[in-house]
Image (cartoon, one colour):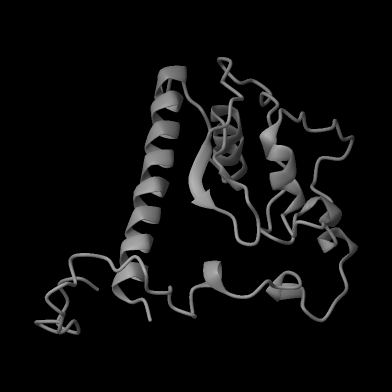
Length: 178
């Protein structure tokens, strides 16, 4: 990758390679530009009634445009039905975690990244959702470890990183358009 010996020393580029051709079509291999899929590729052999949404948009993303509180559940473990097959994640959790030292924002920002087969764009997690995800992955808060201001900055970094990555993808597609 990058500077490794397996990379060609000088890639052949046309004189106009630095200027993306806006009229060329994106590569057919790009999942974003492929024909409409009928469901989750992992579950192609099974019928899934949850994928019958007319816009073919993951159910959890439909709810991402408005504040949705996670329903209170009596069980401690996630039930299999709670996992969204389109991203293998539980529904968005905007509830403060037990023992959380400070309140966090539940505001979500819409990205510039389009969702396949939809007019909508992806929505970034809120500070609270990010905190809950860190806990789910094993992180535990300690005194003076992190502040609410740090969480605000983490979300800004997360979102900008994704926006920059999307811009790089678009540049790559423009260079490799057919």
